[in-house]
Length: 452
Image 1 (cartoon, helix red, strand yellow):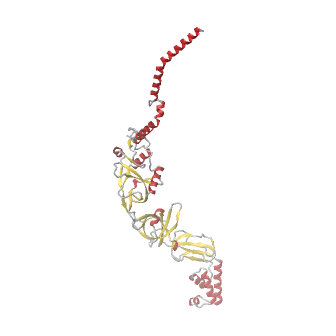
Image 2: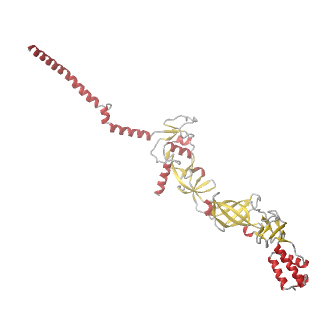
Image 3: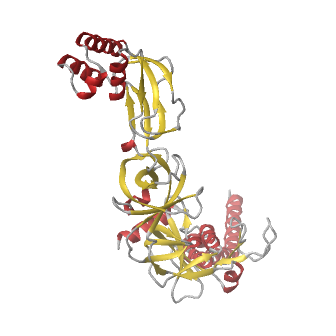
């Protein structure tokens, strides 16, 4: 028992001495651990300093991104590099297109070297008056108001055609065709019977000594289309004509033949259409955008390719109220005197409509305007900056020569890019900023317009 107590005391003493020897080491380890945890590279240090370090890093990255230099190829804008070099597609030197994002969303600055490589050229906006004439194309047509349709006075059958070619020129009272009409033949026989029963001869007819019955039949024959000469022939010969010739009421050109040999016609049926060439119509096709410049009574001058050196004049007499869906044009009609019959139906003509003098508008060279289908865009040099350009949406008007008139978006004296504008726009697209093709750019421009 005594021996066991001594053993326990010995063990306790050894443990105490061991604790005393280990304690300094533990304290040192604890202090070392605390020091390590307080370092920025430690896990807890990272956690405690996360917000500060992250914000500092973000600020540095943003600053780096905002000042990053972007290089591209003028021939292949899709190539983008943060260092100068060669284009991997064509081998051309890459040019600097971005290095300062402090400009607006639709504005870009170029270095002098990039400006020279892109061969950017500008032109000043100047005021120009729209042209006071509208150029037209059209054709010659017959005057429908002067067209004559020769109709049949009686029903019957066409026995002979003296004129059977469309376009044939005829004289007044020239024979057109002959017709057999039972009604007309019966009326002639009635006249012959009356003449024989009354004993009226040709001399009495010429002297006006005729009975009322004969006069009544004569009137009937005139209403059936017989001429005075034909009636006198029946009285002289005392014989009815089976075929009666139909004559042209006036001279002109055959524009249409409505019957053929052997055709049966009813009373009032058209036989032939005649039109005069001394007065013609001219039809012009006017574009919708030019219609506001055309008015009734407006003077026109026009020429025909087939008649070199000759000019014709006329006035607008009619403007068609309907638009041709196929061509998007409106037909305008004028009349022209053609005493020598030089103009022919169907001839192609070129005309000019003279308009009143219009207000001067800002204008730019045609090559300065970029078209997207829905919008028209120009790049304007930013005043006070050496090589800064701003995209601008404009509303265009008509063209005058090699210049485009601008209704809204530009002022006189501003400078627009006439060469290199595609390169500038490509640089904006590469920089993920508004450009002529980006929808965002369209929204920005619309917002600017809305604020006046």
